Length: 478
Image 1 (cartoon, one colour):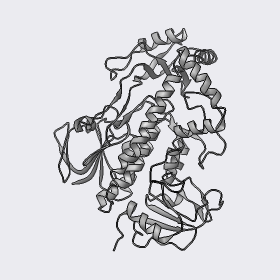
Image 2 (image 1 turned 90 degrees about the vertical axis):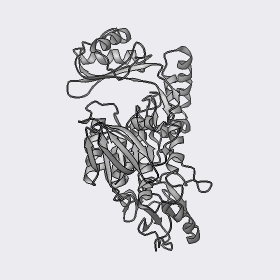
Image 3 (image 1 turned 180 degrees about the vertical axis):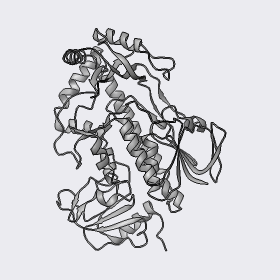
């Protein structure tokens, strides 16, 4: 009996596997593709995902392979300066191609003990009160206590579960690929700049090794989007949009994506759960998809581990849906809005100009940026202090950084009073008696953090703390 089978070895699945292994959960990742994908769909990590990597001690690996860029210009491509003093110690976007992100997360999952099987396609599942039976394409059957579908927008797990996936089908489609071209770089840049004044779903930029990443609107919506476009289709659409095909040749890969927007009705059916694109799909505006999936995994991992470990309080695993479903719904809404703002029609262009003026106000700019980079997320923990439900930024303590203390994936009580205790929960919650170097960064006596860094309680009263510990960390041991 395997503890958890993860279907899908993309960034969501590998992040989840790594999180589960921090709690000694026996994890098997099944990936139907024999080799990792080489194509670059996602171009980087937003602030919250960067924080997630820092919280688990992985950030240095990513920084070694990425490039820092200013935060700004993400909402519908409206360029505004980064807001002053974002609530993060990582006020940048990390440019890093998805194959590199995939590789780093897979390496981490393997290092901490996850079993990864490539070329294994899940084709069937059934579940009972004790576990899940998974059937593979080669006829093999496996048994696990839980199954998590991280198998993308066309999720087999979701379809086998019969979970509704309501939303809107694709209305427009975009072609995307990597290829070489013969156009002079200066002429190419000039044409791209001119076309993008009106057509924001167009672009061609160098990848640094002789190839270019090219994006262009398609002529319509393909009946079968799994069939990649041809180079001739690319050339034709480039000529329609830019007046030239730039002499494109020698494609490495070609694909298409639409603006379909769908959200799974529920993220859990008994012992089977959904995460990442298996639970939600949306247009790529703002570059939120990969980040949303990583953050799903970060929310789910410790909760599922608690369930496997037998100490999860009632409702903890269900809180995964309760917390993450509204976050995805908000991302779907903001990508819908961005899609409208990127239209070439006169009405949406007028709204775009108006919004651009409004974003000159610092509060508006900050609000929209925080949506995209996901540091504005607040889970509903009920009323109380403004920090409740929010993730805590990294802060400097007298003896180091907060995030350095969270690498193990446990809860943490940051106690600036020295008078509190987590006796009975010491196996699940670290008690750190220290003070924040700059009191303006955290002006509370103590804060209880969940393993995902969200604030579950603030205060200084031991009895209040004792009421909150069981809510998130189960009954006291012993």
